[in-house]
Every structure is written in structure tokens, then in C-alpha cells.
Length: 114
Figure 1: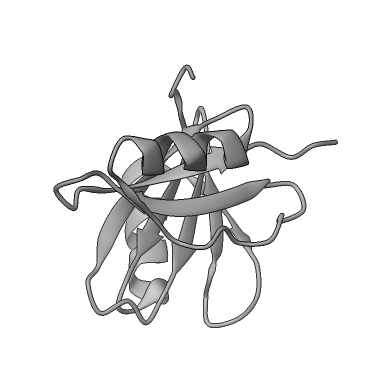
Figure 2 (figure 1 turned 60 degrees about the vertical axis):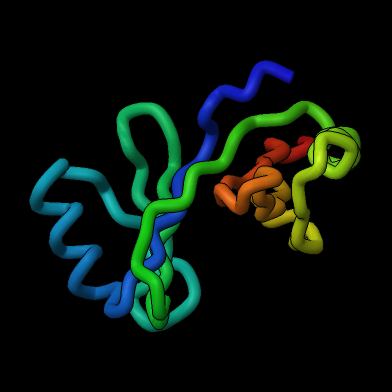
């Protein structure tokens, strides 16, 4: 697995505040999706999702894997923990949140199959 960073997720208490901040700070273009000012930014190299109502505001980093199920098995084999993978999202792919054996959080991301 190459493990290139493929996606970022910004968890904010108030998505509208973070949206305005990052639009003005970096000039990222925002693409609304869903409700409550949620959606995603297009950075110069990758997409960065934004959601609100996060009790622990943070950036989450997702690493590109060619096969999500194989990568999940490897995480478990190495003593890590894995949340249930989410459904495939059109134009985004499929995601899974994980932890290393000490609890360091990260995500796995398989690009869309199309």
C-alpha cells in the first residue's frame, strides 16, 4: 500500500464558521452537499470534507488504499482497530475510520470504482 494522503475531513462545531474561515484563508472553493453548511472544499490537490456538530473539532486524514477490505484486514492483523466502513459515496469512494494499537486515529480511503 502506498498510503498517499487522499482526503481530509474537517469536523467543526459550526460548519458555517469553518467554511468561511477556510474559504478566506486559503481561497478554497466550497461545494455544498447535504444541509447545515456541510459539503467539501477543493484544495489544490485533494478534496476536504466539512461537517458540523462535531464535539471534538479536528482534521482527520485519510490514506489512499487500492482495496479497502484488504487494508482493513491488515490494520486488524497489526493490532489496530477499525470502524465499520461507510457506503461508497458517489465521486468520493469509500471510507473507513481506524486507530493504530495506541489509539492514533486515521482513515482509509478507496477511490471511486468508476
